[in-house]
Length: 376
Image (tube, rainbow, N blue to C red; front, top):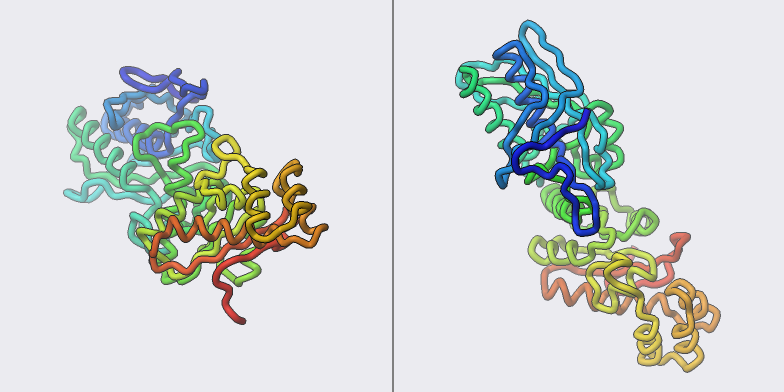
């Protein structure tokens, strides 16, 4: 179980914060395929199995499982995501390789636990196994290398499976993106960077792509599950119209500016959206803070009296400021929504997107709205 690295790899390498790097599902699937095809040609499984990844990395993966039959070989690698909080960390990635038709090249199949694409807008055709383009390229290259070394044709059927992948996929974006039956096999470099923003931002972009491809005219970008539930109930939105924005407001707005959808609702708690109103596009607490002094000035500029602005200035949090202003009869939620809308429209910069903002409290109650509100 696990892996070791040879040559230029990432085993043992850590980020500046001391976090350990890991490997993608695509890298694990490639290693399992190389081992299985080697056994199909030679009768023996290389263990560990060395593969080549982009940027010259040549890691070696230990096999967790292997089986050789009369017309197939199966090998399995356990994914090590390093210190990344990845839902697939520890998952067993299996590759079963069988001989293919002459001159067919590598044909991909989705085994148990790997999803199938059912909606347009993704980088794969509808009906294809959810094995992304870069992992497919890595698998093809690994098959070609094994074929050259052992005299094979390179014409094979490669079935990728993930043990318990269908259950794991329920904790990912796959159901929302129309990928059914399991996980996606992902990765662009083969390396998992701990706590990387890249995967989340890529999911946001794919969510927009799918929404556009299926013709949705209204999407909601929410900071969390409570705000998403509130805005879905408010507008009757389907699940695939909801973008899991999290802290990445800038990623949503900048992508929609280039790939517009007619309507956008931004939804979130008052603290997150207060930061958006201050012009922050990354809403994570480590990268932006609620500026209560700026909020107090905004209260004064909006006609609030000294008591209201003082209540905000001396509050502990944005939610505390909201409650204080509610007691005084000042609509702080609406003010935060208006400021967040101004930032939203500023980033969209004239794109054909009509926006509105919905601010909630911790219970999911709407405490402020701004922007377009259709009549029902």
